[in-house]
Image 1: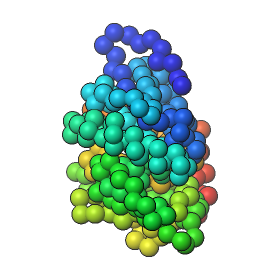
Image 2 (image 1 turned 180 degrees about the horizontal axis):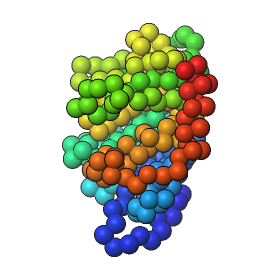
Image 3 (image 1 turned 180 degrees about the vertical axis):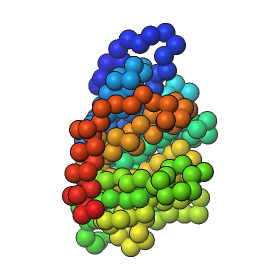
Image 4 (image 1 turned 90 degrees about the horizontal axis):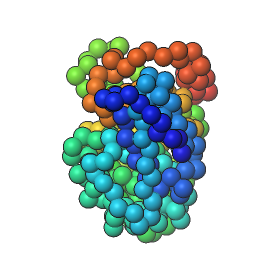
Length: 258
């Protein structure tokens, strides 16, 4: 994992906690962590990365952003049990103080209320009012692009942005009353292949099926997460030379047919 390095006294530092990075890391999730680290470093911001694995406690106040990636079914079951036993209360406290919590694919499912797999219902953390069930139908696989509006008070079309990535999931996720979709599907299948929505959001807790990985394909979203976690306006982040990042985003959009 990236070394935190040295920063000048008083420099804002993004404190990230990766949950189960050895088990929930099958969709290039390390790339998301590296993207956050590099974009902080390039701006002279501090970056601290801590891992929390099976059986380890979680400090709700020690981190600004909590990240949970994707894993195989067996590992997902192990992490689900540990989340409930050792980390659920801390994650709820962190969310209550508006820390950012991001779950991708399996991590998204575990942040919900439940995940039904093979007749067994696995209890989730419940930070998102969603439930997921594995069904005996085709997997939802392919390139995907969604339209999101992350700034709730911005009503004009310029506040709408596109997230592009890849989805590969057998679960169908249904949103409850308290969760709202992360975005509207422009290309791809989304939460269930029918609703036209992808992902979910409640406050600063976000879940999505987009990976491949997510953040290197959407640098603007990485910056939004950094700013949100540091509680600053994203427009105050120093601009970067994003020619390569912009091309990666455009390539992901083209792959999705957008």
